[in-house]
Image (tube, rainbow, N blue to C red; front, side):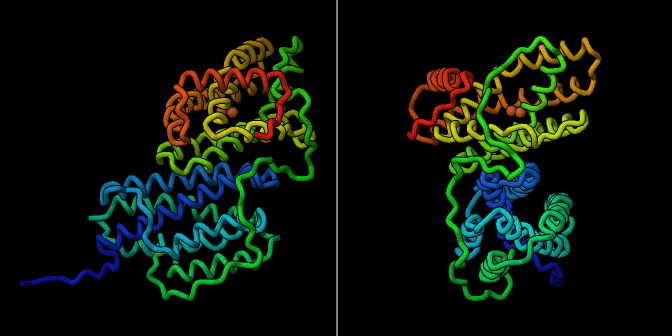
Length: 397
Ligand SMILES: [Fe+2]
Ligand SMILES: [Fe+2]
């Protein structure tokens, strides 16, 4: 009988194993970026991290959609202790620059090499959905590496990056098919990561809590408008809370992390929207004090309470003010401000929907047995008393 030995290096079983490794690495990178977003001080990095983690979530989604066609369950550990150690270690960087260098100068370039090789070595027609996924993931990953080349240009390769490189070699590379080096000892610069209870800011910013959470309905449209966009430039605080909730909720289903990655990204976009509006009006956003006390206050609560206060407190209650703003800006013919707020409100409607969708499961997964509506009512009541008053008490819970 006439048979042909395939020239492709990736067979069906290997394909499943590889896609699962990629999915695992992309997912862990998303979680690491979420954990570090509040702990990172440089504002430009924080703004980028919202986008980067959401794009990594897109990659997980692509790989998940393919994996669920070829294996059940689609989400599973990679079954390689060396790879699991690599991704468990990558979060314990000594600082924000080292963290980004490990992810963007070691892991992502290695992933890009693996994706390119995979594109050439899987069965092109039978595995076409994988090709489609990898081709699109590569567009982002190549851009991520380019972003890091600029952002980290003045940051030399250090001990941490070398450690991540050695851990990757011990796992046989991204594919696990390379020669495996001995596992490295823990790096002397390794710094155990702790979920941040404070939001870091770089030295350009003042940190004060005057007027935190207060809503002023100033009759002067120009003043109202400037305050509104100054407040947008503070929305990193919302991104930081969503990032912390993602990081503290690994037991939640993938769909929650996927929605929350978008939620986090949106808040960094709202922050940037405020920054851009201010720049367009000759104002420097770094002159606006950052009320990081809001994050410190919210982060003292369990993740479900934080999420309830954000989605059912801040986000549900923002709409009347925004509608008033649009009416006021229509009166003065300010199309730019109306456009920005319209897009913001489209996002915020989604965020409220996320809150309604995910709070029941978030409570369950965090072991809270209070009835859902009662829990929400209590969280919003606490938000009214503690946030809207501007007091933001820290209770040392
Ligand atoms: Fe927002
Ligand atoms: Fe929001």
